[in-house]
Amino acid sequence: MKERVSLLQIGLVRGLFGMIVGVLIGLGLVSGIRALLGLPIWNPEAAWVVGGVFGTIGFMLMVGVLRDWIRWALGEETPDFPEADPRLQGWAKYLSVSYDHKIIGIQYGVTALIVISLAGLFALIFRTELIAPGIQFLQPQDYNTIMTLHGIVMIGGMLLGVGAMSNYLVPLLIGANDMAFPRLNAFAYWINVPAVILLVGTLFMGGLETGWTGYPPLSSRAPLGTQWFLLGVYFIGFSSIFGALNIIATVMKLRAKGMTYFRMPIFVWTAAATALIALTATQLIGLSFQMVMFERLFGMAFFEPAKGGNPILFQHLFWFYSHPAVYVFVLTGLGVISELLPVFARKPLFGYRWVALSSFGIALVGFLVWAHHMFTSGMEPYLRVPFMYSTLLVAVPTGVKFFSWVATIWEGKLSFETPMLFVLGAISIFLLGGLSGPPNGVVATDLHLQDTYWIVGHFHATMFGGFLFPFLAAIYYWFPKITGRMYNETLGKIHFYLMLPAFYVQSLGQMQVGLLGMRRRIADYDPALQIDFSHLLITLGGYVIGLSLIIAFINLAYSAARGKVVTTNVWRSRSPEWTLLPSPIPAHNYPEPIEAVGEPYDYGLPGAVYVRTASTAPLRDEGEAALPPDAAVAPAD
Image: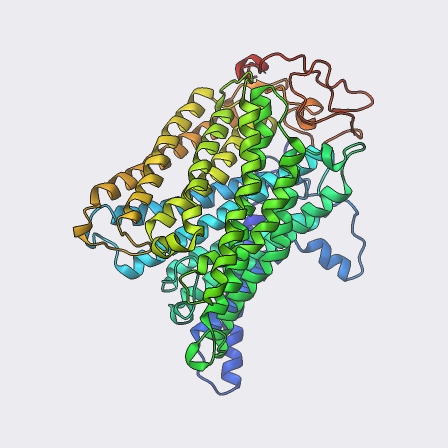
């Protein structure tokens, strides 16, 4: 008989309780110190900042993620391979600390979907306000808060999605049984929970009016909620840095025998390139936000012109991270495209080595382009031309990937299951994002397009094509491996055929109204522009996207419980997790070491073998077309 799990045994519940207690302790500590110093007891800026810090610490202590480190610091023995609480089974283990990279990946993924949905809800709220000219129901300050939260919460959700794919897939794809640092892996996930709570908590602290970039001097003078916005982003940065360190160490040290760098799957290459960006650049956004926080708390004048500060310094610090951060999302998504395309084309990935190296090319050039966001900022004019050329240079390694995808599709034995549909949709949308990008990178056109809705349309195309569509493709593709059950293919295709045209209506509409003079980040617009019908279509497109995601969530939730049981390699993939492991995957992955003996993408080549073990016969691809999903599943119990 299963032991009943009490509410306080669940890590999330304990963590939320610890966060409440921590916030109260922080508020009391600040008030007490001020009373002892003879100052007015209540200072909201200091109290809520310290409360947010103590609340995050309280969450991390109570959720249990720091337990082993504290025991080690006190001189106690700690296991080399940490285990989760054995009493936590079923759904409870996903709401508590686990050190299994697969559970952590699922925690990242589910949290990402929740956070992305919340950000999408914020978008629908302010998009509804923009259906017609004039103020409908949102006052400008409320509009600014909802619009800002849409942007920054969506970015946080996408970072969680990157963590989901990297954590779940990288060890499996290289033949490892876990990440290099399991405890650090758990820490990197759980710190996101209080960080997201801080971001959403800004709604109840006066909001914020800065836009997701948080530019000073506006952010230095914005309402109190700005402080928790700055703190939330700061703590999410810890997650990115620790997660990146773990990915790099795992790829470098835990690859299976025979898996040289040029035998690694492309997704691993993109995960490593992404980790390089996150490890080396995230500190800059943390530093810039910390400086604004200190400016508000202590009167420092880093960015206040009247006191000798320079607001353009913030933009340099912010964009040195935030433009490469685009490639944190995009490189991961492009890795999924390159990983799945050969499976459904039944052909080798064209130009594998060039595609692999192009990921690091994008990552490295991405560090040299940040100032194209600042052509209109007042920075030194002589910087414009070199940054224009470096921006356009990014098209070269990106073009390598496009060329590879087209050549891989050419004369392939294509099949069009839901993951493949989302891959093809991603390619088409990312192409739209890529073609709308050069006008933003060329000085002459950017001076006119900067801060218009053209930028909004371009950015959404880049993010949907470069991240969201590939993320959904990955969810559908690996769903049978994660759950052991098959999703409903019909509902999956309905999701795709609703979402793709709705997105095109939304993104192209945003570009159109931008060319007609619509500024971004404003709550109202001039009726003389005659763009209210376009705004209606943009908003309806957003609602259809939301409807398609609701269908997807229903499909995935129902299929995880009631879907057909998977018994074989559903997609006839050559990856080790499909060829050597059952579905769902056991706790410690591979029961015996694996060896890479061939190339990862030799689809359609008779007798080709990629990985093997001493006792497991690997899949041999004899060149048949991909099996339809229902042919590779067994009836449910």
